[in-house]
Image (cartoon, rainbow, N blue to C red):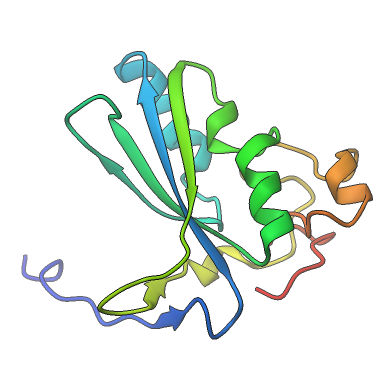
Amino acid sequence: KDQNCIQVSTLLNSFSFKLSPAIVMLEMENAEAMQNLLDRFRDCPRVINIFKTMGGYNLIALVIAEDKDTLESISVEKCSLRSSEGIRRSEFYPISDIYFSPFLPVREHLTHKDKGVTPCNVDCRPCSRYQNNKCVGCPSTHYYRGTL
């Protein structure tokens, strides 16, 4: 009963590891589109958290990438939260600094590097950004080239 009151966890200073966090703001068309997006990215190692909000943008995600090139890739490519169906509008904001505490939770248990297909069902290998070394690929796959 009280098991969900306190959780001890490890947090990483994203800037010490030269990681690039960003905020993604999404206005979803309806509850079904929202649930589909949540299901698609539930096991994504780049998504730190997704928050449901009340207002124009009804989902806000905190994401992370290994470098600026990969961050750009996850902002525009097929693996992007913004590429999902049912999005009316979106904004993508790279984070330049974090005040009060630079430590972020990273879902490192999802970076197992043993899958052939990404959790969002996108194959990185034919992507031009992956082929041109502008993206390190997905940390859950065996063809990942990054540091997570």
